[in-house]
Length: 475
Image (cartoon, rainbow, N blue to C red):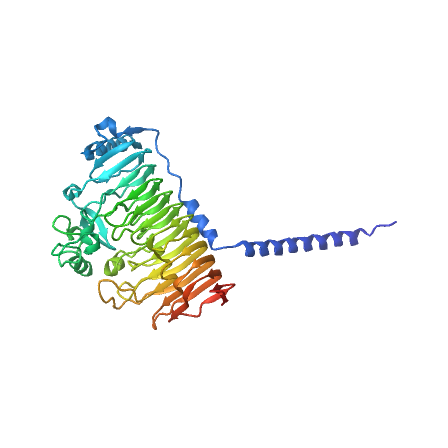
């Protein structure tokens, strides 16, 4: 039989072209199918490198520390950190036992490590937190009492281990300064809202007073933060427990490449936010437990004029595998948000407590201004919340009316694969502004049970619902 070679070659060529086109279309289809916003979350997580430290150890006992819970070990801890830093880095060990200290200031290439059974008790003597340092208070920079653990413009720092940091704040120490009777304030006692405190700081910020001249500290009633890396790069906080905080607990400000992992925050004082990244980017909060007196996680970017002066958005923040118990909100953006927040990814978390007010919350106003965009929330199990599963409020107010000339914007908020057993007062509560509608909110495969009012939506583009039910009704 004679074979038509030309025909055969043409047939093979056609088959090859068909296979190439078919495989190309298949690949494009699979690529489109598999593409997810959370691919970006994975990239952010991978960009935060695993920190490495030289194999040097510095035990604070070798520098005179005494584990009796009464001796002030500030100098011993300071010496160990200094020696570690000067040796090129390594691990400063706090062994099992109770160690009283004043503020701890970290240096580059130092891993402060708490062994199991270690408890660091922070001094109740407020003078121990002087001299004042460059820090912040509610989104405004100032010179104030040192945070309990502080790092300023350092690189490659860590706080790790299985021990506990106890701020020893209580209704007789730090907390009364918030001004609330339930936190120990007595009639006539000075507090943070007195004219020489927050009103003075607000005025300084509005007038662009240099931070070096915004001097508070002694004679004022503005509480210190618990742990604050300030303008640091490559930060790890891992494994430890924080309790009895004076104010916000974990506050990375103006930082890049931060990982908070396996941490427990169990602190129910006033303004005891669990973790508040501010002006920070590339942050990974993973496998943590938050049981707090305020927001579990609150992403921030400065208050009013000070936020606009700094003008650094918080962005590229991944929250996953966390357990939120008590708190004003599970994952919150605001209210100090004047420089904006973008690219927030929340996945695989549990939120459940009769004292948890909201699951996801965005709060701002026309004094704060700012923006929130590109928020993705996926695979969340909510047992119960008090007020709402999702709350977006562009009329947020505290310390009186909050109206100004800076119109906020909120857009691209996406919730997916969320199950809620008890939705509280509202399934979804949105209060946009007539001049600035909330835009592009989507709920996909979201199922909310037992919400008193399924939806309360004002000044928002229509929500896009896909396979979503509230109280059994499909939307």
